[in-house]
Image: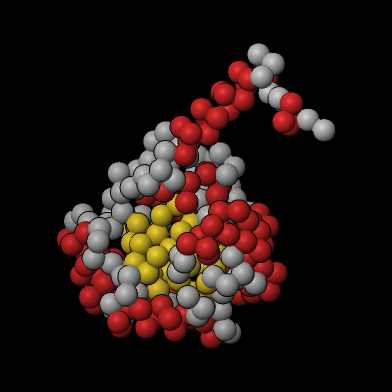
Length: 262
């Protein structure tokens, strides 16, 4: 995909949208070569790359650094950048300044902001100055201390109604798409049918307009992944085995052999 209009066309035509969340040159390059529609440089890099226990510590400068690498790996892919915690919460002015900095310095195409109706003023302003915004509702990791953990959202009737209204408010504010994270599949279907912009699900069932997964989860880098993840490879096991083989060959004088010497 090249622009937000292609997201909208995909929904209209019923074409499912594929998004991968990743953070560096080589994985972005593979995503582009595989024809993935869009790359989300997620603030999940705080956990996946930096080893933190939440998304909160990652900084704006770190997001910019990783997005530059992704852009070099996937120059022809639509790239969305997570605005990190406290980079857009203090004021509309801060949000515009920081989101503008992200797009100017990285060459990315859009930003993503977590939250529902409470974020509409910020989103409207960003859109009005030419910064495309993807919304994000359901399980919003930046609100983890308020949510009390990584739990499925929208289980009660009150919460269902709130999320539906949030989605409609984000559409009205100008979002070109909305991520639905960790919500019941029937609720995701209802939200998807109630708005004209595409929904991208993660742990939201099959009735959204597209799906997003973290690259490292999809290829099985870590031993454990969430229930909603399908592991297409067991790369972690393969890498560990290769490292053990290397260690053994070095220790036993097998590597380097004559064919590896000058």
